[in-house]
Image (tube, helix red, strand yellow):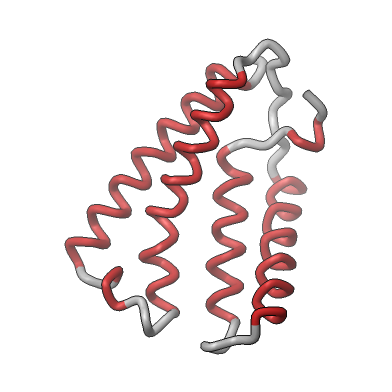
Length: 128
């Protein structure tokens, strides 16, 4: 596995924070081209800062493709569950994600999924 496609849970979280920052900066509604540019640059900047500050561990070349796919799925769903209530703070039309019970359930479920993804990443996908 090449180093440039090696990523971990913190990379996924950095990308999610980049998306949240981008949507908090954009006016609503924004043009489609503007959204693509701002979100892309924001995600790139956050992942670059994360890679500069925290190095990614070496990948395990013997890891199973099914485990990598399961890791990506779990990390993606966890990031969405954590990110949606945070984006709802900045976007006025997302009122369903501002209710207290919904926020608590989504944040709790998202944090649990991200912890599982981190465990899979550190134990099965990276070299010790």
